[in-house]
Image 1 (cartoon, rainbow, N blue to C red):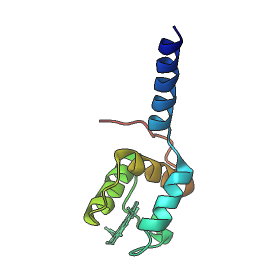
Image 2 (cartoon, rainbow, N blue to C red; image 1 turned 180 degrees about the vertical axis):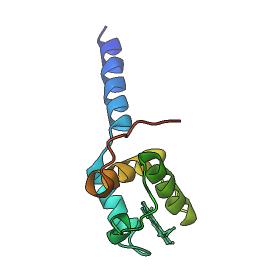
Image 3 (cartoon, rainbow, N blue to C red; image 1 turned 90 degrees about the horizontal axis):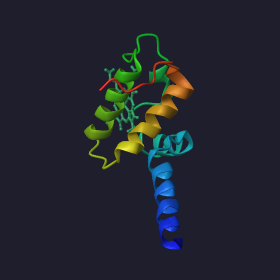
Image 4 (tube, protein in one colour; image 1 turned 180 degrees about the horizontal axis):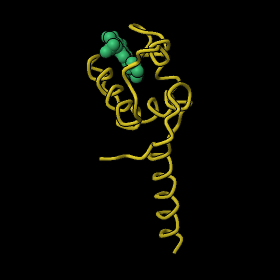
Length: 97
Ligand code: HEC
């Protein structure tokens, strides 16, 4: 009984840490890895490329892979969420895939 309970507890902890979007973490990763080529003015420039949440996700992925970073999917999600919260502010953040 006690054993079963700890398994349950562990799986709750595990699921919540794996899937929670963490924009603070995203900010740290962005500041550490993403500021060599452009600063955040590209996100607010007049002719910015990204115009949907989906496009933002794709662009983040492109920039991550172009650098050969081995980020986890959740790292990309955290950075995407951080950029969206801070600059783009798309309200449609559901995954269309
Ligand atoms: C090797 C240089 C380089 C690095 C490092 C880089 N980017 Fe980029 N990024 C670019 C270039 C170049 C563009 C502009 C592309 C264009 O104008 O079409 C861009 C554009 C973007 C845009 C779209 C801006 C818009 O127009 O709306 C986003 C979002 C973005 N980068 C996110 C990131 C993130 C997140 C990281 C960190 C993983 C990152 N970039 C790291 C080169 C880089």
